Amino acid sequence: MNRDKHISSAFDRDLETIQALVVKMGGMVEAAITDAATALETRDEELADEVRRRDKAIDALEAQVNEDAARLIALRAPTATDLRMVLAVIKISASLERVGDYAKNMAKRTSVLAQMPPIEGAGMALRRMSAAVNRMLQDALDSYIRRDAGLAEDVRQRDLEVDQMYNALFREFLTHMMEDPRNITSCMHLHFIAKNVERMGDHATTIAEQVVYLVTGELPDDARPKSNAVPLTVGG
Image (spheres, one colour):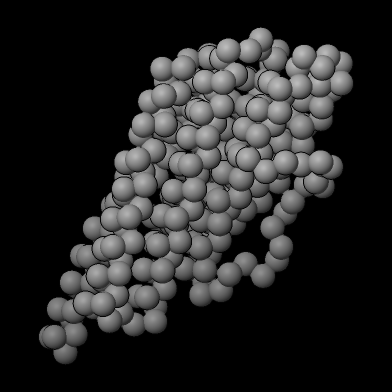
């Protein structure tokens, strides 16, 4: 019995260490989204370059989470419930890494867009959309820390709002392109960015679904709420 308690406490300590890495990673990703959106709106190439450089640290943290989680599984032979927690951590860190990649991609396109005439209101609209996604991500991570399935479900429902913002932006960019062909290149880059931000929201939703699974033992059985897709969408 004492040995079992020892193994359990060792597992808990190891898992807390890994979770601390995920929380740190989450903070870095949230900063990347905010800074990438700010750099886009203000056409700040230096800040965009900084976002791109910092992405390596996010990637390194994900690699460390995976390595530590694999070691934890090998050394502690966790029970089914404990294994579920470890697998959730791995999936959450993978989603965070992808969001970091999308923020980096936004920063890359910012450097290109800074050399082109601005599209009025686009930077502000994308910053608002990014802020909505960032709030989703913060709440998804809070729901994980607190094991709060209700908050996680709230995050899932809010993905619809991000989809609607994306659809509205797509139509706006299409209008700019039809009104003046000189806007086409800029609007294509902006559309790629908007699509990437929409995908960030999808990953925040994936994290929330992992929390629901962690707390209840079951993934949500209803489909994610989605807005009607606009035609001719292009991946980022």
